[in-house]
Length: 267
Ligand SMILES: NC(=O)c1ccc[n+]([C@@H]2O[C@H](COP(=O)([O-])OP(=O)(O)OC[C@H]3O[C@@H](n4cnc5c(N)ncnc54)[C@H](O)[C@@H]3O)[C@@H](O)[C@H]2O)c1
Image 1 (tube, rainbow, N blue to C red):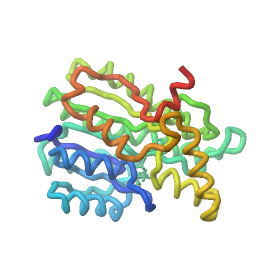
Image 2 (cartoon, rainbow, N blue to C red):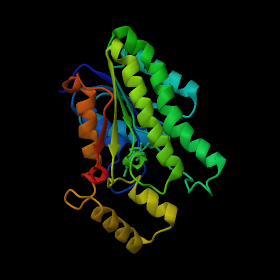
Image 3 (cartoon, rainbow, N blue to C red):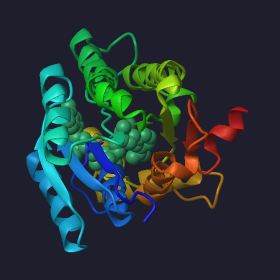
């Protein structure tokens, strides 16, 4: 019960449909198993509801709040809903991240770039902006931002990489600015994970058939130093649990790779 008596907002708590569990759903389930009461925020009410049902099956407590985090009013209302339901916010877990329409810098449209920035960067900031007042008042809080090793490793994805690098910078800025309020802000950089967002998402964006999808999975596995296999959503969830819990009470401003050693190659 490492999150006993804590209230957590998991943003992006649903998931892309697919064979494996996604990062947001695994994190929400693990937080609930460890005693947290949860507000599950997602643009897709249906996906968040499936997470809520899985948590309820295990005896946990969670409520769904449908919101598009690229809209500040919806982020403000999501935090207000959490305060109404539970009276506090101890943990804010910003999981949402997209790469919709991403291309190289010479062909990416302004519209796609803006949308990636709105969701990957402004969305987490809006959630933080509206969660900070109550965290400051209670003089405690833990914020976890889900970044990506794309922020620091070579990546063909221009908008996604820039948004995640900026999210890392935002994490540092928030950590230093809020330490005096006893609020910790850290980020996780997942590497190559076997999640539907990555596998089914990329396969459908590239129009891959079953054989090509299998080849892509094998190619992703080969790039991972530790065990030659992608990680799972539970690897991200376990790191998030540590950063959300009081076990990391002296840790803030950390950008933690969860990547099987992939980013260690760049030193
Ligand atoms: N899977 C990987 O290999 C990998 C690698 C590095 C980083 N990441 C990061 O992990 C995070 C996502 O992981 P996941 O497996 O949970 O993905 P996922 O796609 O399964 O789940 C993300 C959820 O976010 C929701 N969402 C999307 N846009 C939204 C919006 N505007 N407002 C509210 N909700 C929105 C979706 O409906 C979905 O339920 C992202 O930040 C991603 O960049 C993943």
